Length: 283
Image (tube, rainbow, N blue to C red; front, side, top):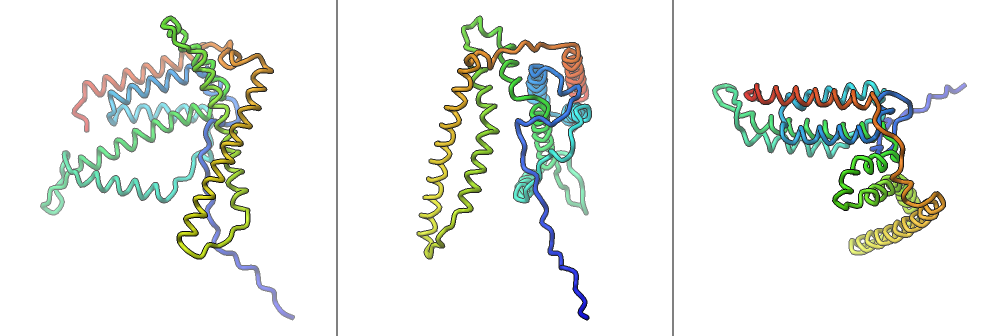
């Protein structure tokens, strides 16, 4: 009688989570129900605030605001993309390079003064970038793409007095936002089909470069063909539904929750400006 050994399990490869954009997280919440124009106004206002007051206090308050919104919207951790290794390497190289610049504040280590100014500035810029990315991701995860075009048309209505084609620009943006996820799926299918095709192994380096160039040309030609076909189908669908005017028309308007959100954002921004102005000596 021979004993059967259990199958050996090899090292499991860690699955990476891709970046998911322009796809709202399923579910309903207070943040999901907000008008798209309110979210765009909040993003614009916070971006202007961080442009003129990019201090630690402002970054911290905005980060707390984003985390509170993510908590209210019930955003799961699984939507966060995985960080590739090369990005960690780039961040580490940038931090080391910035730390070499020195500057205040300085600390004494074994009688040697080391400036921490460059490293702190790099950390502040990195934190600022992360907060802005999280703010944009919150809009992407809680807003339907079809609501952005009409919201921009409503917010840009005063610019019609200057004869600016606001509705046309809003319709073009709405079409681009709707087509982007669809084209991304098409390109992924094309790339996967291309990889499944049998390939001849080139023997020389010149032949490998030529093969890569031909594959790139084939992929570009296929991508252009798919894009034109999708554009033709979308044009027929838009014509059947009444034209591009329907893309920028939506009766949605701000409600009480939207005004409360704007008031909270203004209060947090004013608090950040006061702290940054009065206590400007905080590093």
